[in-house]
Image (cartoon, rainbow, N blue to C red; front, side):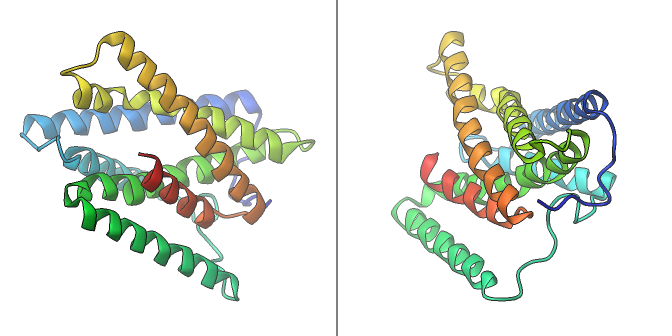
Length: 222
């Protein structure tokens, strides 16, 4: 596992506290932008508001924090035969998504959100920045496994922050108890995604494979 020299060396508690605070800030920013967009009567049925709010949040994070590529795992794209595997899986994803849209054009916005926006928004945060910070803060023994576990738990908890979007989409027919059940199931699914995407980060040292896996999962799992 590659640990960037830009990853700060500090104790676990201060590091996890900063991470949780940042994640809460990211979700609050996204929720605020989502609320503002709904006030301007952006359509919510096609997930356009969700796509725009996530894209704007990601753009703000990039502008404010100016992340280093090594810290977020976006560096050293394979130049040998390995790159063709990424190209091949990327092409397969485009073909499958295209077939899905051919059968149901109304899925355009959900497909863009789930296969493009979410992977590009979440993977640099969780399998990138958080992974690098945890790898630097956790003890050397079983470092990779502990980093995988912590980043997965945080990824599962992160999905509770999307309750507002879920509530808007299901508000006409879902009780509070049902919404709670939906959010808990989202955490279970997020845990599975986090473990598998984290395993790919662990083995490759980068997040390219994690992004592709996340996109494939969302294409078939939403």
